[in-house]
Image 1 (tube, one colour):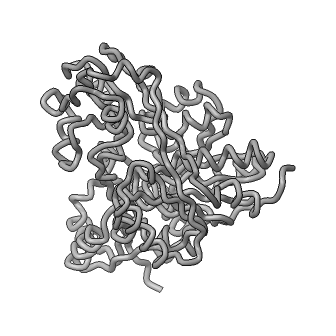
Image 2 (spheres, one colour):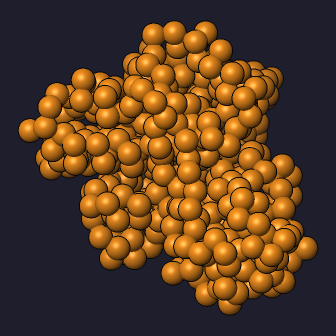
Image 3 (cartoon, one colour):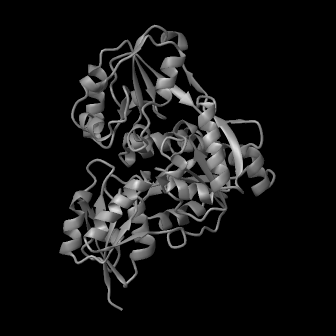
Length: 442
């Protein structure tokens, strides 16, 4: 059989995973390159030989996705694998058109060849869009398993390997010092810190089979903490999917969010407290059509701040979770909701005061509203975020990110954090479902 040259299109996550579990030791294919997008400054690197395996002693180059057609021609590529997430179905097919016009086949890989089996039960928590409330749902699942069912839980988080890939192959986070040890970005800290605060060990990295074997050694149950609305890397015993009525209809228009919904055992309809009735009704119809056998849990995301009275009448800058605003395409988040609910006099538009890559972020994601995405992919961008915040004339900064941003950067204005957790409404609850699945307390 003739060996096929392959390119994997990705964003430093699903692309590396698909390579590791399917292509790394497969002599039928020769992966000549990865292409990278979505995340700033991840191209121009090398997938290192230490991770690429014996078939790739020189490693595999990572190019910008803009070079795709030239790479297909240069390497006589037979097949291009699309391997990133949270993009519209239309976008997926525009990429297909590029590949087909360049003469290669276009491939989407399913769960059969890319999910790993675990010796321990796996609960996967995924979503149909970034910013749906997947992280708070994951925290709630871990809380129930640990405190109501007496299970030892290890969370495994979807990859965010933006630095030294060899050093990041298998990462374990159990305390704040581990975040510094691995030089975590804001985006990584947003996902890991809330677990650490609750006493849950978190694994992440690049080689997810090696990660799974480590996690299994200290867990009764593994919780897959899915990111960027990707499909799970591990074969779930229970697949929970979060949908967002603030973006009703997106659950049938985005990849692989629709696939997640169709696979769901449980669907959490989140943010019912702040969404419109029409949005909630549309989501319910789509859930019934695509996942008629799934158990539906209604949920809210109640918000709180330390001192609501300090917000009233103030001119505020709202800082929101970065991915929710960028490829999640939301114009606002929990910080904006808090500013309105607690009576801010004005929400200051930070765009005139943005610097460096923050300016580029607004240009790339024009749907972002008059709020500031907490972009922090590396020290330089964190500094630019800090400069943008401090240059914006305001009385108060409202921080809607899942972490205490004030601990990472020097904010000169007074600031308050917004907190939000999943609150189930009525029955069934996640507790009911998990108890039925995994039994009574040990």
